[in-house]
Amino acid sequence: METTDKLDNISLCEPRVDDCQLWDVFLGIYGYSALLIAHRMKLFAILAKKPHTLEEICSILDIKSRPAEALLVAAVNLGFLRIKDGKYLLMPVAEEYLLENSPNYFGYYWDIIIDNHEVYSFASLEKAICTDTAQAYGGGDVFKSHEENNESALKFTRAMHSVSMGSAQAWPKFINLSKYRLLLDVGGGSGAHSIGAVSKWSKLQATIFDLAPVCTIAQEFIDKYALHERINTYAGDMWNDAFPSADLHFYSNIYHDWTPEKCLFLTEKSFKSLEQGGRIIVHELLYNDKKNGPFSAVGCSMLMLGWAEGKQYSGKELSKMMQKVGFKDIQVIPTFGYFSIVTGVK
Ligand SMILES: C[S@@+](CC[C@H](N)C(=O)[O-])C[C@H]1O[C@@H](n2cnc3c(N)ncnc32)[C@H](O)[C@@H]1O
Image (tube, helix red, strand yellow):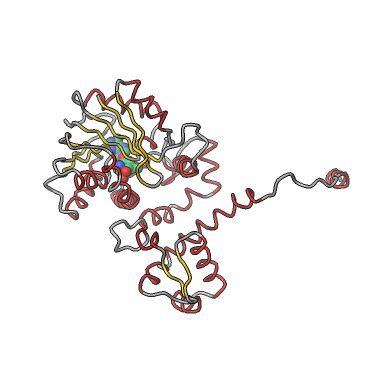
């Protein structure tokens, strides 16, 4: 009754702004679903062989015209496909990152998102927000789970390799590493960044420091790139074990896994462990200094709520951390896509 009374009293009032932002927020999840489903159905591999019409795609994927059109138009709208003479073709971004035979294949990362889709459900994210605890693999520390489950360690490490290879080949071009001899890739995973760094700097060697099962996986990547004379692995726990000697410490997508206190601990540990003149490089997808964007950092901080205990940081926040423990000549350098490096010298 009360509701009806209230409705009776509503007066007309034209909105001051339109409602596109509200549509965009919830419709965004459908672009995400369309592209990941297209990836799972191997749409991009099919179109790599030759361009196809809508009708041909329906027959190859064995789906009706309505869903096929929805997927294809979504992929066109999001810049992964284009249409020429009534046929759908791959755009360069799809050729580069969504074909399994590309050295920069991103698809293993999309696979881990699909395989762990419940982490991105409304209920799971709501729980992560209300309890401030990660929900992936049913909750708890994902990295401890990897130590106990080699299959999930492999899938995660392959996924990280998949997102890292593009930026790993870019950041080493933005900084002169000619005087450094050994890069310690802390939490190096597959070693994607070590591979990028030693490929650019011919005198540089690298050590991938990671948990034991991950080091075994990293060794396979090192062998695959035939870099066993330049890169080795060192099994250790960054919280408890001393770092082996190195004059360059590199952290990619590590700080965003951890709280500011733990990031400060790692920064100080690096400062103490590096020799004089040694350098730290932190590679992350950064917030701007006002911390109102970009959206990539906003999204990644939400991602971290589901998977870890960290968040994205701004260049200013990471610089302050480095300054606090004694690093000098601190620089924030945008490198590739959404990524930047923050670096300082002891
Ligand atoms: C998000 S991944 C980043 C991998 C890699 N740096 C990259 O950007 O592709 C985090 C890495 O930190 C490693 N890690 C987590 N806890 C660790 C610990 N206590 N000691 C050493 N490595 C750890 C994980 O095994 C994983 O490889």
